[in-house]
Length: 78
Image (cartoon, rainbow, N blue to C red; front, side, top):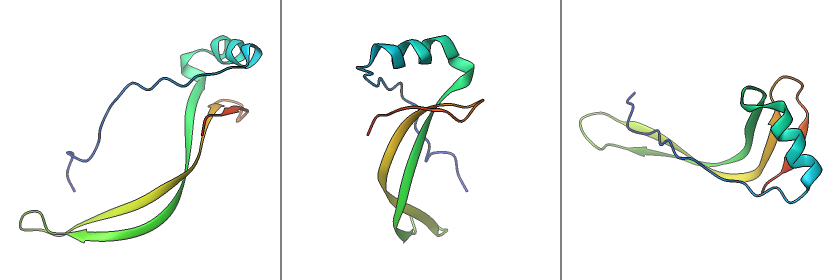
């Protein structure tokens, strides 16, 4: 357990297609999300203090901007 493993940061994704950008804007903040597709690379055991901690290391396979209500994929970012 623990809570020091999370990091919050604002990220900007360029959307070159104006029609796609307008669809994202029209959907609004509550209906738009970012979908990360990861491939698990390995699991490492660490012992930073008196307890064991497992870290899952991954490689990003894709990042998509999606509509969380309909499941529509607006665009692939990576």
